[in-house]
Image (cartoon, rainbow, N blue to C red; front, side):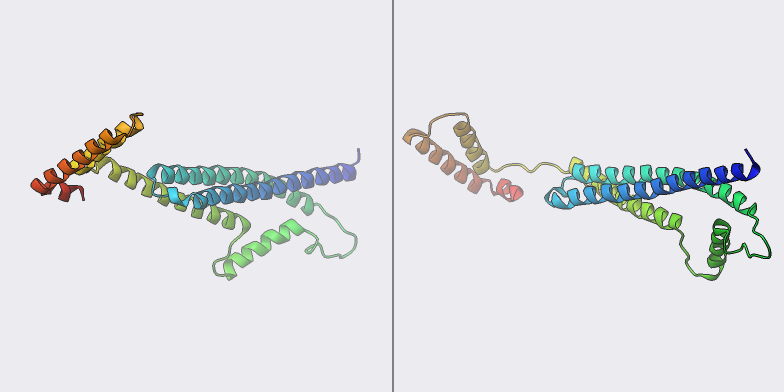
Length: 216
């Protein structure tokens, strides 16, 4: 195999390696957006459960784990892409054209690196693809942390909140409801007994108004 054939095979191999991992990086970010949309849609669909601290805690942890895993996956793909870029830059430096042909516009990877460095210096708040991806992961991670903290605070408040005592009227009626749910028939005698229980509870509430005030 001649030197030209070897160089051509190396260039083809490096380009395929670069193309594959660059495509995998974009696809992984698309999957991240897909999973992110699914989780947010689930949270918004069951918005009535947002008062449940466990629901908030689970949603926040899911978002944080999602952002962390895809951030690490993106860093791996970025490393492999840079490996292929460095190989292609070295192969570009070996390009030889006849005559006085200008190779500046043909060396694409070297030109892109040079242009990126110049724009970083001249442009305010310049972002590369890596910067945009990292910013997206950071925003999701911060949102997940906020939701998780809110869930933990509400869970702590629920654990220290005392239960309210029932009044005599509520206790009498709840006991009658338990009898009905237990399968006891609600005949005339049962109705008279229930009315008597409710009347006795009202009298007890009038004599001891503090219990009703506490329960309300």
